[in-house]
Length: 177
Image (tube, rainbow, N blue to C red):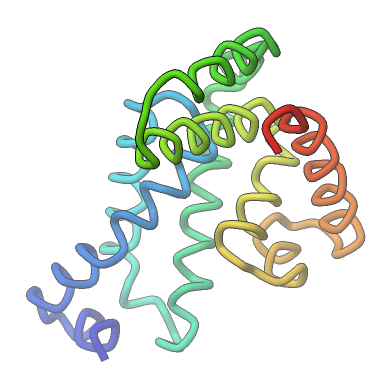
């Protein structure tokens, strides 16, 4: 209903829709890039694209898939512009340093924040092609078919990349799990 009202020009509905999706969009980008300023910029850009093109959405029931397409294409555009920046080398010493911090501060909240940081760091160490598919599968819960469409790859390639991403993550996180 809120999507349909947004398409019809209801500003209040559009504001509410953006309010509802902004955290999800921000979270997706935070798992795809480690530069906080870029995460904010990407989020703003994706939300702006959503507002500008909401009228082009043909089926309101496909909003989630349509939004994932906007997020994915925004991220791909970003990586094309910043390819030289993407060759950041994440060393395992930083992962071990984070591991040492887990036990030193009390409280579950701190523990979960540290674990989230470690997982995010491990995700960011993956090559872009593996990172995008694992985030779409594990965080968004998309099917192989949907990921295939969003990334313009075959289902077999998606399955292979997800398997490789899982293996790499397991290897990086084996000391933590």
